[in-house]
Amino acid sequence: MKKQIIKIGLLVLAITFINVDANAQKKKKQNKKNKMEETATKLELKTEIDTVSYAIGMNMVESIKKDFSEANFDAFIAGARAAADNDSNALVKVEELESIISPYFQKKQAEAQAAQAGDSEKLKEEGLKFLAENKTKEGVVTTASGLQYVVMTQGAGDAHPTATDKVEVHYHGTTPDGAVFDSSVDRGKTISFGLNQVIKGWTEGVQLMVVGSKYKFFIPQELAYGANAPGGGSGPIKPFMPLVFEVELFKIN
Figure 1: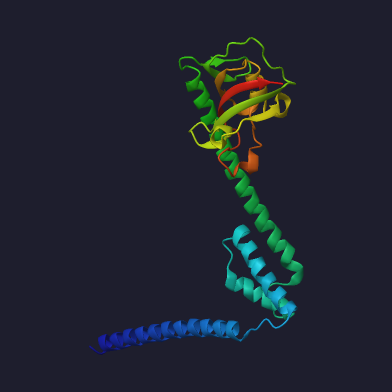
Figure 2 (figure 1 turned 60 degrees about the horizontal axis):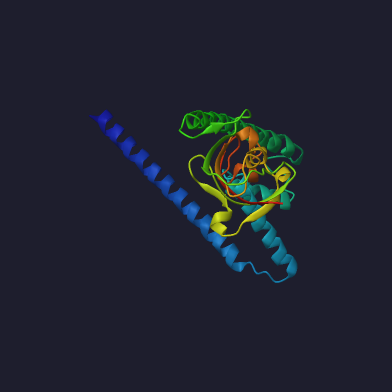
């Protein structure tokens, strides 16, 4: 019976200590929050140097949020304070900084490149599948280079532009899944350019047309942008993506 009472007593004591510790931690966090709020309230930007210094701090953090979103900002602020105060008890030595920072971001970059390579390979496969299925559809013609096209409207003339000619066209460009990335039709204004100034699929395809024609082109990635997608692939056009264009030829200069 005595042993049982002792066990119950110890259990109660342990629970008490846990509660006290939890309350202490809660109070510590609240004090820290209050201190930060008090510091922010007391701080005044009295001079240009004050304002620029404050702005640089904000700018650094905004950059870190973009490039190092997983950052522990409590640790960041503590490190910044240690450096500002030349703290001899800093948790990391100045001469160790490069050996800590560089390997981490090299590893992060390698992981991102591996993920991108995987995505690119997937996009390649999807593009090849799209073109393989598309070439079997009625009316689709495939050239020796792999360019595919459908004649939507055939013009009455017989003069074809050459690779060095300038042409006036209307066009409507989409990704294989139909997302529009550029369209003179939507803008309501034709465009003129030299056929030697555009992607290979355009240079080859438009030479097949005569004035008054409207063709739909399915351009393989090797005749489009390949790995070098506009904007680094941040827009609708991704690396190794085939492109679809409806093109109407108005004039050959």
